[in-house]
Amino acid sequence: MPFDQLTVPELTDALGEHKYIADRGLSTALLLALKLGKPLLLEGEVGVGKTELARTVSAMFGRELIRLQCYEGIDMHQALYEWDYARQMLFVRSLGSDEASDDQLFGPRFLLERPLLQAVRAGDQCVLLIDEVDRADDEFEAFLLELLGDYQVTIPEVGTIKAQSRPIVILTSNRTRELHDALKRRCLYTWIGFPESDREVEIVRSRLPEVGPVLANQVVSAVNRLRAMDLEKLPGVAETIDWTNSVSALGSNSLTAEIALDTLGAVVKDRDDLEFASRNIQDVIS
Ligand SMILES: Nc1ncnc2c1ncn2[C@@H]1O[C@H](COP(=O)(O)OP(=O)(O)OP(=O)(O)O)[C@@H](O)[C@H]1O
Ligand SMILES: [Mg+2]
Image (tube, rainbow, N blue to C red; front, top):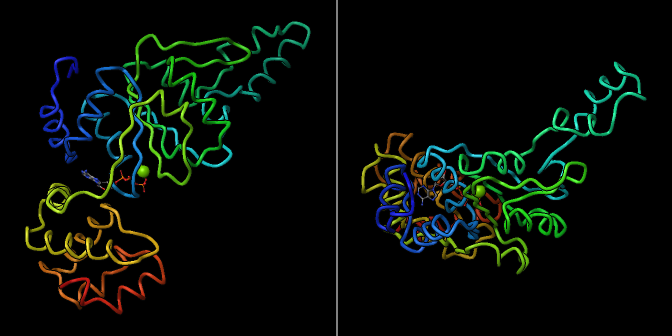
């Protein structure tokens, strides 16, 4: 699907066909990212479909999804490239150290591609997901700037490698810390909050087509009441889906207090929250 002619409603429909229900704001941000060839930075609550959007976009355009999961302490070697030391060593032994030149040793033959290098090489054949970038540290964020701004990476021993065509790049953050302006400036930004009730019912029904509208509506209302309570961890859309699925798996097509109590662990995942919600179950379901 070429995206230069694509409109916002068409993109929303195409996402919907892949079971991803996007509101106008998100579809617009995504469309602009595609048309302008800029990375899209998604910040938002937990479990609201940030990672899923990248998966859906890759499926929709039939492109490979290359995923870099960020974590504390991640560095260039996990993200970009590594040298295959074991094979370098064997090569040196087979030749004798005098004959093995640096060019041979630090050349393409022994370069192990990690996700960012894979993505630069794959260009417009892939979607690059840089997931949970807020977990990485400042230094790593700075390291990403070259890629995000110029679609190129630099390997000290090899030089700069530029993508021949632009990959679609999606970054996500749970906002455990503020990201730098320099990174944000290179991206289009959008915030994904909890969906409106109608939209959340639509999401549940698209993911669980066997579930009836009554149950879907009841669970979404109950989740919204939980979100309004003073809980430690607010349930995301993923939890709404899990809860609906749990109730349905027990053979029930409506949410009673009893069934809600039995299945609360699908939606509330903190001990104190669980105690609080159990004590107030009538407020949750009514
Ligand atoms: N708009 C949506 N349309 C369809 N499904 C959705 C939507 N939002 C969330 N989901 C569902 O919720 C699940 C969780 O979404 P996802 O893992 O993408 O959340 P996330 O925002 O990346 O969460 P986290 O911050 O915990 O990583 C998905 O597998 C998908 O089934
Ligand atoms: Mg995620």
